Amino acid sequence: MTAIGKKQILRSLCTVAFCMWTSFSQAQYMESKAEDSSLPEKKYTRQSGLWLGMYTKYKIGEKLFYYGEYHMRRRDHLINNMAQIYLRFGLSYLVNEKFEVTGGIVTPFYWAPEGQYSDEEQIDKVVNQFRFWQQFLFIQSMGRVKIYHQIRIEQRWKRDYIIDSPFKLTHRMRYKISTYIPLNKPKLQDKTLFFSGYNEIFIQAGKPVLYNYFEDNRLFLGLGYVINENFQLQAGYMKSIQQRERGFDLNNRDIIRFSVYHNLDFTKRKKKPKNQEIDPIL
Image 1 (cartoon, rainbow, N blue to C red):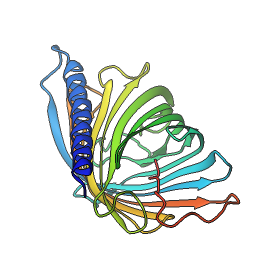
Image 2: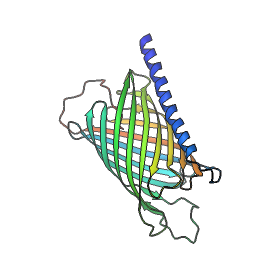
Image 3: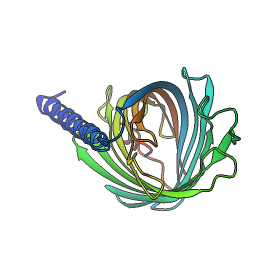
Image 4: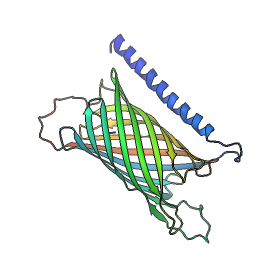
């Protein structure tokens, strides 16, 4: 590797680290601002979980893609109890090589947490939500490293676990900065091992939201492997600080994530050149 190439990588890594640190610092600031002096002292509850996910992106037109996410999430000592089944569907439009927009629906199912309700309260053990979502993805190239800025907006109709509780509308805004850095090859291509990292801030609003405007901050570090142009694997650790409804209760979550990424092209096309760069599924 040339001296210039090493300098580019070092500069890119420093920029990524600075952006992720800035994002995380903003989340900590927003969390501190969410605290009201009239509320009790903050209480952190340690939790752990295992999240399994599959991401799909299928090209169905020159600039049009089907996008899907399918998740199973467990909690309490990683795997003791079911937490969520999470299904996200959408259509993506590639405006240009640096900008992409996506929109669709989400249908998650939530399992009631153990011990949150008394024996006298009648609850549904599983409740669903209805959501619309929109996403804007900006890609920033820095030598062999790419930085992805993802803005996601969701309109959520959610309800409590108590039987016959009504659905209420809330709005959630998410910003994620992420990067994929190839480790054994100059770019993402077949048989590439890569580093993956991101930080994502969650902000919510709406009439039901009184104290927890800062909903979540997720920091992820992991490794991935590109099997070929159709399959990628990724595994890593995620730290999540999640603010609950009363504002002073927070979940300090340690989560292990395993993900499979599947990509297909259903359009008529010529065979791709060997060792062509492969884009991650976002």
